Amino acid sequence: MSRLPQVSEGVVTLSDGAALRYRLSAVGGRRRLVLIHPLAMNIEFWDPLVARLAEHMDILLYDVRGHGRSSPILHTFSDADHARDLVGLLDHLGWSGATVAGASMGGCIALAFAVHFPERAEGLGLIDTTSHYDHDPAAWERRGQRAMTEGFGAMIGFQLDRWFSDEFRNGGSPVIARAIEIFVANHAPSYVEACRMLGAFDMSRRLDELNLPARVIVGEHDPATPIRMARFMADHIPGAELRIVASTRHFTPLEAPDVVGDELRSLTAATMVGTR
Image (cartoon, rainbow, N blue to C red; front, top):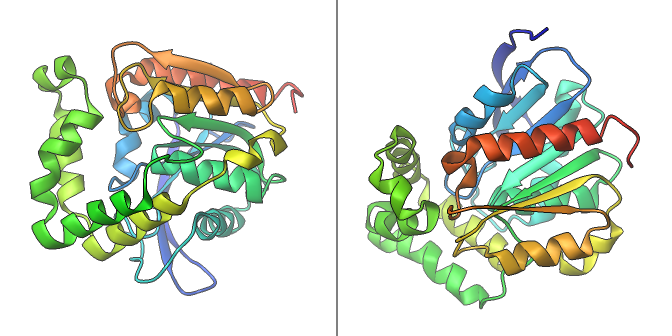
């Protein structure tokens, strides 16, 4: 019998004084899932997916530092720092652990969390993401500086082409307009620091340390984190399963929420049957 989730929203103040906005959708079950959004998005990114999963598990969303209503980033902030932010949020809620899944930048943070805090990670979902961006970190710097000098509006065309397939864009889904609204509302200095973090991110040599159920999900035509990056992670994380989502690009949770939702439902189920 399905249960209606109780939804609450709050702000946690971390040890350094920064604030993280979070939303918890709870049914009081044993399955717990954290979802971490992509670069320049916020917790609303996950709305289509939460609608499909909320009856089955407790779901925690939060605005990553530098995004949404959370505190800005005004100095160097590493993937390990982001992982520690999540630990602080879990401690605030009294969660000893959870399955952690993220898309794009959120997947990098989820992977860093699983590597740095393996005792807290019960399962790992890596969606349209990578263990290492293989282009020059200077490219990330240029991307961040473009937001500073030209504004986010000048980057919309570039982003839409990467985020969604032509067919999905032409279909006029309201999630496209909302993604644009979220994107252009970002804090440019925080965006620069997030880009720098991604340019420096590299967990490729740590993947074989992981010992937990894992799913790697990627859009068939993802130009940002293509199939070869997903396959590398799936090949090097012991027991990981790879799912390629047909005809999609970089934002599969928005373009194919049913497929991604099925994978995450299976992943959280795997954490409950002693597969670790």
